[in-house]
Amino acid sequence: MFDKDALPENTSLALEPWEYFTGHQSDFYQWLVTHAEQFGFYFPYREDKGGVAPEPWHISHRSIANACLDKLTPTMLIAQLSEGR
Image (cartoon, rainbow, N blue to C red):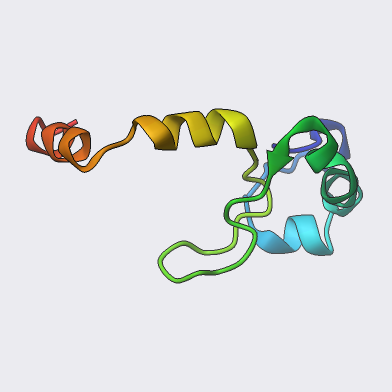
């Protein structure tokens, strides 16, 4: 998620953490940090937990994410991986 209007002219979003922490997306990111929870959103990749670099632009809706996780079983995961999806 990003604020298109905050992108400098002739600039493409690079999806780099600095854009959100100190760059052109920082005002938008601070708004998200302050207000995302009241709308049910959270930041699953806010911190580096090993394997995935921090992604301050990545938000998920908590109730939808939990509903999906409840349906994800080891059997379903094995079947999907076996089918090459």
